[in-house]
Image 1: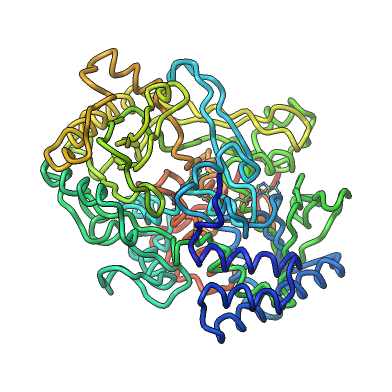
Image 2: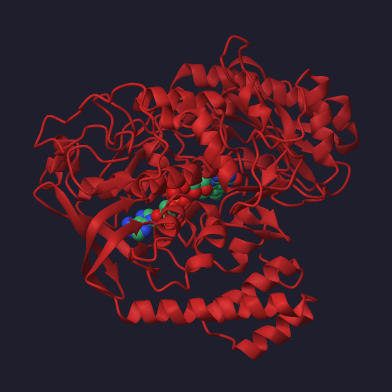
Length: 594
Ligand SMILES: Cc1cc2nc3c(=O)[nH]c(=O)nc-3n(C[C@H](O)[C@H](O)[C@H](O)COP(=O)(O)OP(=O)(O)OC[C@H]3O[C@@H](n4cnc5c(N)ncnc54)[C@H](O)[C@@H]3O)c2cc1C
């Protein structure tokens, strides 16, 4: 499935680096094989030295685990790897990063065009939502990455920063202007290394995050932009610039791909510092729960190398296990709705009814399918063109995110329509009204929680996606797409109930579960504006679960930004300027944090 022989040199070099890390090859073999790729000698030597130093350092760290670290970060995904990196920049701080999954320098993760084959595989937690009548009684797969890099190791590599209004709303919810668009934009500009049309006001250069418009896209991608223009949707040179400050537009996709390889977030943040003696990264380390004395978090309990271990943190624990595992870990640690915890005999440390509630995700409909006269060239992430638009003109921001996909993008139900040489247009809903929740299933920390995603349960979501399917149909049947069309397969002439039924059958997750431990000040809030968990000390959350509302677009970039905010706060660098006095919000029991 993952063809390494025809892979890019970027993939081949990263695979060699992975082999150096696991000591499958020695330095001389690395140098010889990397030279065969035609790479310059100094760069090869530097890479060999770096990865050998990482291997030696991490082996030494594993052999001499400490009983206590200053910071323990749980999860090495989009947010966690950023937090660990930034904390480790202080050479005086001892940082432990615990990751349940394994290594990431493998073909399935590195090869870009076939990224979706990881779903359901070894790098996926393989969660699934409970069946729901709103999606015709289907159980929808809810993929999440389980490897170094978390979701950023199996995702579609899209870099979508979110709409201006998302962050202005977060700031209001948090009561802290440090979360508003202006401040968030500063962070994005600081961390980006943008390789598209320059826009110094909005895009950064020289930062950790290499990002570019999909290079050398398949000819069908610009055709999709012309199709959008023919419907009155303006096109932009950059999907993350001023396009995210207005009413939408179409653009070639911003991707985290370089030299033909996936750039997951650890490749930019973690690997550069993994040779430092103050950073310990453990893989296959599964955190069961936090250890808590009174209302103070003292460390973590985790399983590693067939043993249950407890390690203390002298400063703080940062929970970055993602929007499904973070609330689950909180609940197993006694932080959640008392009634829920009582069901499994878990003693309540902090009664926070919002843990696991407010679940939000982006549905995407596998229901637009066209047969082409011949094979379609698949390049980059196979989703090289996308657009944002409104389902209703009165909305304050776009709510539809419509994708062109150079392959069939269909659910297990609509998949029966796939034939040779097909491509898709798939509308996603990025401002959903439906809300879901998570519940524990048992007292076993290894068991996945019940996920009630309630996708499309709010009729407004179905109505918006109905409009999305109509736009998809107009795009696919437009003059601009004609050279790529032999016939329209889906949705065809379907309308009314029949179109709604196709939407329910074709609904899938865009895999952006978020908001399950939201930042805010109401009764359902779990963290405050500085990401402290209410009712306990020394515990912060930095990942997608803290979003008050899911962002307008894919979620890895906002999660990276959340990781950066967390690090700034912990390092005392936050530019936070609260214009609204933050009220003391405490759960009723047992005690407020001092
Ligand atoms: C198939 C797929 C496609 C996607 N496509 C895109 C895309 O193209 N663009 C985009 O912007 N976003 C995309 N996303 C979403 C994006 O990757 C996530 O929003 C982002 O990774 C979430 O970051 P996070 O830090 O909240 O959690 P994650 O990145 O999920 O990281 C959580 C980490 O914690 C680890 N962990 C969990 N539980 C434990 C435990 N008990 N002990 C130890 N470690 C634990 C996990 O293994 C994981 O590594 C996609 C996601 C998926 C799954």
